[in-house]
Image 1: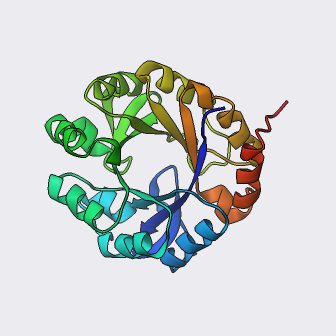
Image 2: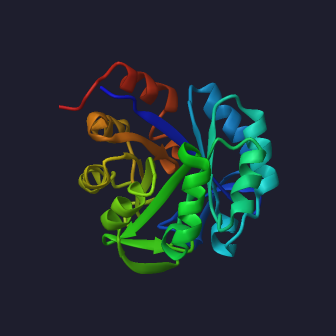
Length: 249
């Protein structure tokens, strides 16, 4: 089996670690007041890569919690990937200078193709493209708007421009604890010919094992948020299960 990475998620709003339901800023749960402490905890449990979202930045259209994100990156030895409000080369350069290993472009990938291609050309594998879909169409601006661009078509176009990694979120599954949309994730990996990281809906360990079973098809990992905070998935145990190459019946 090809490698499969679990990405524990830290969503930041107002300097705190929170989770939203289906991206709704009015449906927020605060899980911890100290995101740096949370990042250290995920690393201690065996996390190999931390996923951070600047929710304030996604809504504002520019990074808001960049200083805090720099503290997170500096507090752990594992790589950190960050998304939320990245719209300029200066934004990208600043986050990478703060110790972030990979930046995630979301809204910009739809609204500013020239910028997106420039970032891919300059930073290559330090860039992931976040594709958040609602009913198969790409959503932007912190999921507040839905475009007329189909997710698979966008992935094909950007793969041709050098994108190597995509993060796919089915918004209907995010925060709902209903399991990931495995079929859509497989389809995106097949359509793009690139690595796809699943996001949204991972609820129990078997969800991760079902995804990991498709690692050879380009499903390279999964971002897990709410399930870790509620305890329905134990990070260390899940990592062990995947390493042992266990699969559901």
